[in-house]
Image 1 (cartoon, helix red, strand yellow):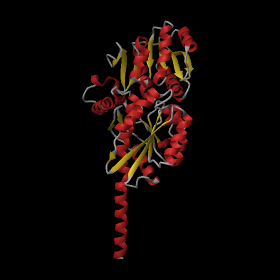
Image 2 (cartoon, rainbow, N blue to C red):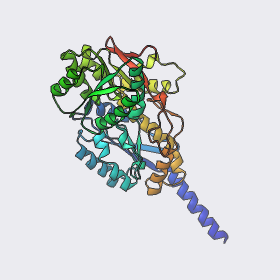
Image 3 (tube, rainbow, N blue to C red):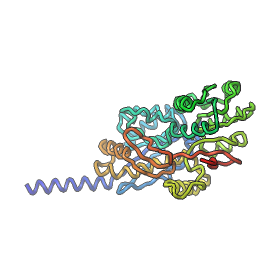
Image 4 (cartoon, rainbow, N blue to C red):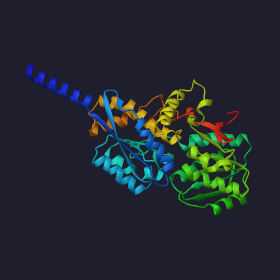
Length: 383
């Protein structure tokens, strides 16, 4: 009996030691080339800044580029799961790309931390989507701030131009509900493809409707063209943008044509104006400084979304490792459960409080009302 107990203790001790020393593999998929490169490049650069230690566990990152192609995203994801045996995946960069892999991560039981815009990757919650966590603010949280401002400014009619993909479609859904709630009439509702080189037809329809304001819902560089086209056609009403436009290149590409743009996005855009009491300010500052040292340029918020995924994993991995060894299905399931329990985790984008129903976890601390003034982002006065 004593011999049997001793053997059992030795086996348990060996198992615990193995778990403590095992390497956690995390796959990263970015669109660092192709049409989404303005989003994917800051995400790819951020991989070098991700934490390589989580408790007793060493974390190894395996980074792949999908070239902005949803089909290539699926191929990269399957490689990471089947060949590299990763325990979690960060990515991909695009909303359509992320929507196309939810089924596969759910079947494999591998948590996916998606730094994408559309809330459709986590809402409505399903058995498949319980494996997906989102490190960007949900559309409704951002839209509520925009529509509250529209209401304060007396906006009565609104035009909408969005991408014809999950990002634009979910924004159209959220926008319609909030417009009705704020008694704002939607007088134009247009779509375009991200790869389009002209939106003249769509913008003319908006122009003819003469709305008090226009909301553009597009990620990355695609956010510039509708607004620039409306400016060239003589529209001078207020333009609102989503957090998809929250990148330095929006200012460079749009220049004077996007002056006065109002959007709601993370504190990273206006870090120097944020009070030191904000729980995310120090995290965002340290990330920004590290990114600038690495690349020589300031980061887009999209890079911060990837960095935050690493912070979420860093907290969750030790909890999962206390229940199972990395590399096992049991560890991945425990990792999913631990991510769902993330509480008051300050990231670059805001503070995360995940629940079984909310796999984004942001509150009002994850958004600021911002205006483009004199070629730079600044906090909107009075907000």
